[in-house]
Length: 338
Image (cartoon, rainbow, N blue to C red; front, side, top):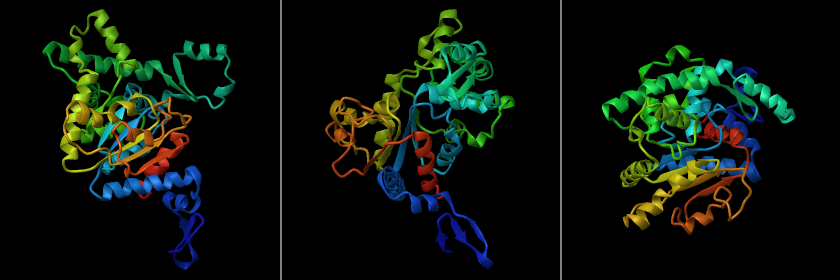
């Protein structure tokens, strides 16, 4: 079949819509568009060569409904570990159980302080053009996850933040509230795969605040029932060393911040602090609209990471300076051959 600017010729003169990836390869030829294609192709080569991929998720990508494409990436073994903020961990669940109660505010740039206060009075918490409903999202999840926290506390058991979420999803306790197809939830796909995860700085999240409140109230007695960020690094180091012994591991970073800064440091930690040999990251890509700057971790160009022992001189590395809500699904479309 012959591809023609967005259409593919079929039998008897019929035409069908071309795959997204065909459209991208025809039109995305220069600048950030070309970097997107190069990064996606290198991602595929990395996997085809037996490599694994860690994905880091910052910003509000779960509220942006990244699960529509990321869940399939997880199911098809295109992602092998995830580092995300506490917000992204919980907000994918919020979307799963309260999607119909979200409100979109397309004119958010025109809102006055009084408009914002009216949203607060309605218990709608705004993330750019989208409002998360407190009662239907946050309180529904709180009621169920609190039971898991208290159960572990009474038994003297300890789990990571994401493990509590996995338990909640596997229990089916929230199933009656599902308002999207569960296949479009990336955290559901991760739970089904028991995907290795780290959630650095989880305390800086709504659930982190709820956990603190549960301790103040006395619902949870032992703060140790929630495993810590340092333990996440130990767990990550063990996973990295065992995986790197067999496969090169790539690093795909959406946004900046702790979701990316925390896990990428596992390699120099192993080398410099443990004084053990291991591979450096075998692929690096960051989607970022942060201003390029050597005074900013999020804006630092990949070359700077060579000086920290995170990347090699010949590590394939890419920066796509654009909006991740646009770029990430397009890269996933190429990797998935959509």
